[in-house]
Length: 166
Length: 362
Image (cartoon, rainbow over all chains, first blue to last red; front, side):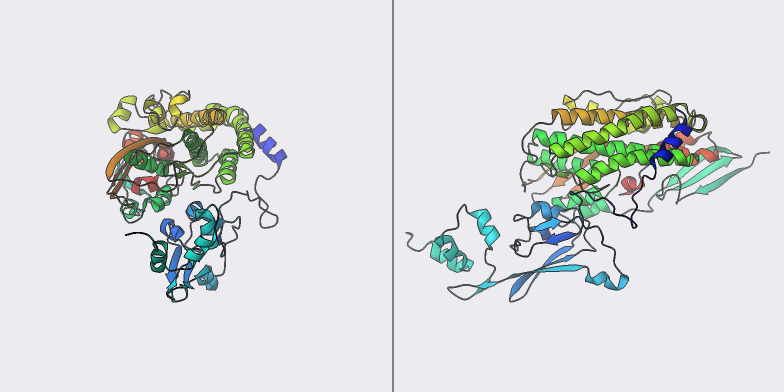
């Protein structure tokens, strides 16, 4: 094989590289880019924190809510959080434009709040099972399930066993 | 009169841009002795695995080495599956093989491209890298990343192929195969510049390969046709027919040719895997319980036999993870390969074992 022929062929084909930044670079649909979290679908199960390889996802709590915090600069885009998320609240977008100015490096953070509810019986603040979790756990969410989920774990135990024989 | 002295080479920019320090004893232009000093990029990954749970470790071990980044988590998952007695579904076995062979093709082409770069044949280097880009596009499109393809989870895989992605994969193979078979391999086989720099250089005999425990294309370039995929088939390699590539000469050229032929055979294996891809689930379930136990698993990484040993204590944090990488033994063989060689051939010989410092030092 004459290498000159290869060179001529390649010359005829033109550039093999993407024209970025002067043109668009193609991004496949499966590309694992910046993580996005759907606030409404997150149920605060903490599975993403458990599997996060880089420790980019952390949970914190205060009196009113559970907070999911993701540091995008610590994220390695492995996508484990998306794989293990039971409600598919986490997705990896195709956004690979993650460069930013040095002074913005501590601002590459996303924050999701999952508010606590007060128990309708005793008033204790607790993390209520959110709608996506209810849909995942029950075929149909009836009146009984809806009533029970507004109770804190202790009251729910009492309520569920009411009328049961010892 | 010839003078004898030691020259320091490295730690940076010997063949690959990874640090390894060579103390080369020379007599005039001829190499008489070699000492290796490693440890410049030791990251303590084996220690870190005992600080993380098995899910995090799948990602951590993927980052041991970018070119074998499928083999490490795959082998680690295989040990856990052995400990827990998890039955990996047949479709997952085939998908694992597909991921493996895609990585192998890209890895071999990368090494062979670097060979061209070292001998100063940069237009050939660019040509091979451009052809390799076909495989990089496959990785990016099917797995979502060019290097860390994250194909495996414990008990199976986390990606699936549908009709569109299979068509894309086959189309990319159709593009790559003729370039590899009709352009790249004939150039490496006949081009005078390539032959004059690589034929008869860095010789190691088959007997020395056995003595040094060499693995992968390095050993197969000396006629030692040891391929884990055939000797101890894992996944579904036992169901697929292919030949272990080997050449008898044991020089730099033979090792490069073995890699090129393996890349070609990987393409054939990929086609066969896609053709036989069985239906069914892609993993054994989301959260396996791993009991206390220990296991060993081995796979054929692009550089040779990769062995993992894992001890678990019933929690999801492993008690001990140990890996033996093929590069570790291959480094020592440089002492044989370089003896009597010329100083100018040092990078070429180093590259011919396809060294991986990040695997070696972890």
